[in-house]
Image: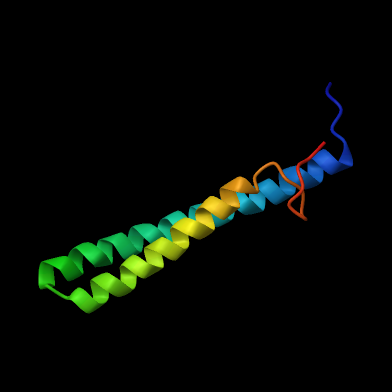
Length: 79
């Protein structure tokens, strides 16, 4: 039986929240990409530009969230 310290449990909880956020970001990005494809089919440049900006922001948020995996609530690495 392995021992899990309270801090390890908290990190796991924070990671679970971060993984859920990454899943949400990916779902939203997929939806934007689908809309971009449909807008391209219609020749709708304004929608393409808008959704590309959204995808960019989601990508940055995802990278930031991934960097936080394994860190505590305040973003410091777990010991």
